[in-house]
Amino acid sequence: MPVPASRLVIDLESSTGAAFCFLAWEILITLDDEVELIWSKPRHSWIKWAFLLARYGALSLLLAGRALELIVTYSTMHLNTNSIRIWFALQGLLAFSIMAGAEIVMMARVYALYNRNKLVGYGFITLMLAEVFTALLGFGSFEYFSISTLVSQIVVVLLSVARYRYMYRRGHWEGTRIIKLMFRDGTLAFLVFFLLSLLMAVYHILQEPFAPSEYVNVASFSIYKNFQYQKRTL
Image (cartoon, rainbow, N blue to C red; front, side):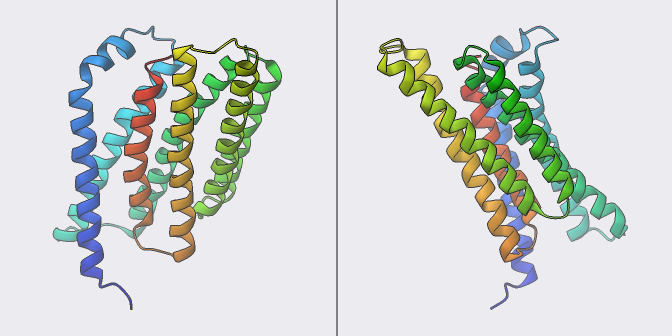
């Protein structure tokens, strides 16, 4: 039985409102760590800008989305259909940029584990280019986006596991806390991204209303938590 539109509006408002409050709370309680570990990095540090994009880009996107939802739901102001379409396209673009930034950090960690092996580096560049290409090719569908991200994430976690096992068998990393932490956080980040990409595909297949807003909400939580782990070791 179809869900009433009023119920969908309530669910949308609840999810976006909760996501914004949660993300703002996370930023406030960890601001001291951010100042110490991120703001102190030089301006040319790409890790610094990737972190700031993920953290404040998601917050800004949620705030703008929340304002637009309130206008559409409660205001008598007329919004042009094309303007709304452009907004949702920008939502998807920014969400993709946030996720891509987090994936690049994950790839950089694995690249470091392989002692900056050029073959690994070129492989990651190829994966990112393929991800961007498939996202643009299927811009009207999250199906392409989710499939491309799933492939990248699987490659990253397989390379992480392979390297960890290789070094562990030789006793190089036994008892090394930082390496174990990197392996644990990389696996956790992979699981979060995998579930997020899977949700994208499911929403698309089921043709659920307001799905893009849900992606942004979940991305705001998962990407932020991923960077919280990353910044401790990079």
